Length: 130
Image (cartoon, rainbow, N blue to C red; front, side, top):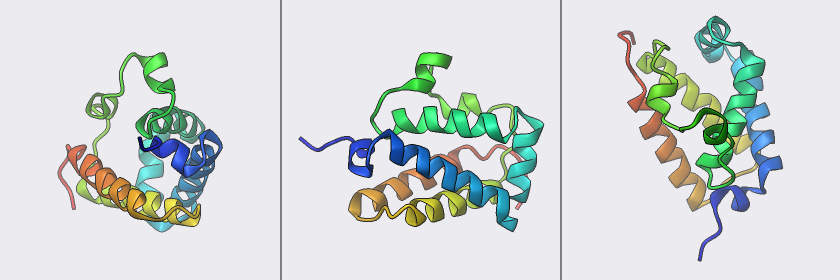
């Protein structure tokens, strides 16, 4: 039996490091500018870091903190109030894929993860734009 991805990545500490690297990139890269604006219109970046960690733990096969707190892990519902353009999805992916690599994660399981993240991010597109 294969270990959950969260264990393969190094546990919750590794997820926390990934989330921090991701948001650090989002806060500094020009590609993150509109994503930052969307987060600030909501509950802010600090809250986003907390919620992203909670979500990714469960998404990667660990404890489902997000579902325990919110009752679900439906990304379409979570983002329904956010106008997500295709460009936003691509920029989110750019930051996440880079953060994953910067944290030293690689291999076939990460290739599958990146493909899954791409499908999910593009499914969230709900607004016109580039």
